[in-house]
Amino acid sequence: MQNMVLISNMECFRFGFPLLVGGASRKTFIGRITGRDVNDRLPGTIASSIFLMEKGVDILRVHDVRENRDALRMYLAMKHFREEAS
Image 1 (cartoon, rainbow, N blue to C red):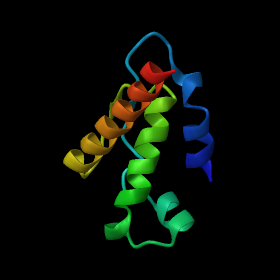
Image 2 (image 1 turned 30 degrees about the horizontal axis):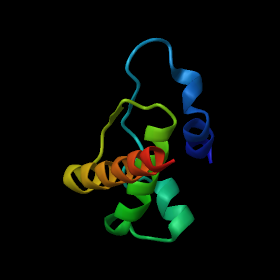
Image 3 (image 1 turned 180 degrees about the horizontal axis):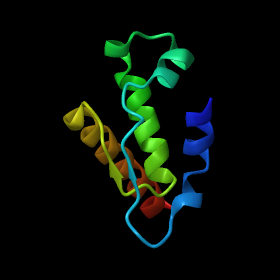
Image 4 (image 1 turned 180 degrees about the vertical axis):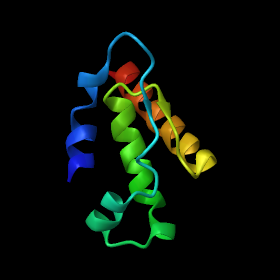
């Protein structure tokens, strides 16, 4: 599970430049965890995208751009609302 090690320690790769991850979309590690075929890994990809964004990743390369963008926007809107309500 090398991918999981890299993803969970993504903040270690911040060196003052934008951080890009181009290898989490539809990957085998998502299939191993979820048991899903490569064409059914969108939920796992979106979960990975949200986690990576929380770890400080600036740019994500994904296959399903619209779906990932919408999920990230919704997550950020909910997070912002929660912070404003506190």
